[in-house]
Amino acid sequence: MSEQEKATCVVVIGMAGSGKTTLLQRLNSYLHTQKTPPYIVNLDPAVAKLPFTANIDIRDTVDYKEVMKQYNLGPNGGILTALNLFTTKFDQVLGYIEKRSTTVDHILLDTPGQIEIFTWSASGAIITDAIASSMPTVVAYVIDTPRTTAPATFMSNMLYACSILYKTKLPFLLVFNKTDVQSHAFALEWMRDFESFQVALMQKREEDNPEEGSGYMSSLMNSMSLVLDEFYKNLRAVGVSAVTGDGMPEFFEAVAEARKEYEADYRPELDRLIAERDDKKEKHKQEQLSRLVKDMSVNERTFDPSSSRQADEEEVGSDEDEDEGEIIDKTDAHFLDIASRQQGKGSTGADGTRWPQP
Image (cartoon, rainbow, N blue to C red; front, top):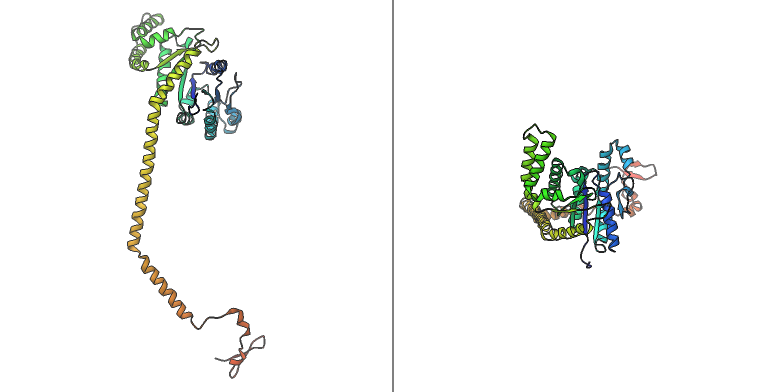
C-alpha cells in the first residue's frame, strides 16, 4: 500500500454465539499467511480468553469484574459501563490506530458478544463514528448460518442487519459463518428470489400447523420480505467458515469493494457534514461577534470616553490644586522645630514637647 493510503477498518458485529471472535482469529491467521498482518483491537471486556493477540485490549484498561462489583451491576450493565469508561479514553486509542493505519492493510475490531451493547449504545456510536471519520471503515455483520434456515429466524436477522446498516450508514457486509455445517446457498437464494422465500415460508407453515391457514406471522413476514427486497439488491453477502478457513479470499474481496463504496459515497457525505458543521460554527461565531460590536456601539453612544477622560483630568487637576502647599515629606517629620512656634501657654506632651494653645 502507498505511504499516504490508510488501512481499511473492519468492525465485526454479530449476535452472541455467531462466531465473531473465532472468525476474527481466522481472519488474523489468513492475513498472516498473506504476509500482511493486521492491527487488532478487542472491545469485549468480558471475554475470558482470546485465540489471538490483540494490539489494543480493553481488558488492559478496564477490569470488567471490578466494574460490576463497584457499581453493583449485572453482566450486561458491567459490559456497557466498561465500554463507556473505555470510550472516555478512545482519543488515545484512535491516536495509536492512526499511527499504524499507514503501515498495515487491515484493522480488525472485535466487539462485545451482546450485540445491542455496541450497536445501540452511545459509546458504540462514538467509537464507530470516530474511526469512520479517520479511515475507510466497513461493518461486517456475522450470521450463524445453521440457525437461520428457518424463514422467521432469517427474517429476524435481515431486519437487524437493516437496522444496523441505517444506523451506522457505513458500507455493510453480510457474513454467513459456519458454512462447513450449513451452506449459505439457501440464504442467497432467498435474498435474490422473493418467490423462493415465499415457498419456503409456506412449507414451514404447513409443517408446523398443517390445519391452520395463513396466520398473522405469515402475513407479516410476507410483507417484510417485500420491504427488504430492495434492501437485498445493494447488499454484499459472503459465506465463510471460521473453522476451515473457507471463503477468506471472497471476504477480503468484498471488503475491498466496500472500501471503494466508502470512498465514493460515505467519505464525500462525511466531508459535506463536516463542512456544514464548520459553517454553522463560523456563522455562530460571526453572529456573536456582530452582537458584541453592536453592544459596544450602544455603550459608546451612552458613554463618551472623551468626556470621561476630560472629567477625570479635571478631577485630578482639582486634587492637585488642593494639595498645593500641603506636600509633606514624611521622612523629615521628626526634625520639625515645633518649639519655634510656641506662643504663650500650652500643654506639655509626654516626651516634654510644649504644644501651643490655638
